[in-house]
Length: 139
Image (tube, rainbow, N blue to C red; front, side, top):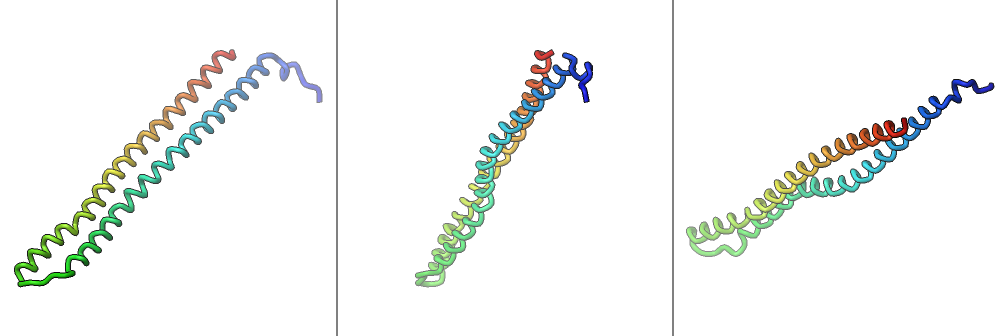
């Protein structure tokens, strides 16, 4: 089959080249954005793990501290109650610390997740602007 003049016209060649450049730029920007996203997701998954496990570690510390409250209590009833109340209050500190760490980690995770979403939108907008600028310069 012999190519016709329409297929070899300068206009069709420039359209073909601009389409190839547009596709190459899209692939390159998507690859760059995906690479940065993977790096950012590693930190986010660490924050999510901390937010999930911190209260559990706090509960474990509180349970172990409560078991330790009852060791070595001797004396009359009133002094035992006073000693137990002080020790039980101290036993809640790991739980409070675990919850505090979890809340801070969750807030950080939510903040950085929102920043990552904004970054993706900015990358898409920059990609479209680059493609449109290349299309204008190639014409």
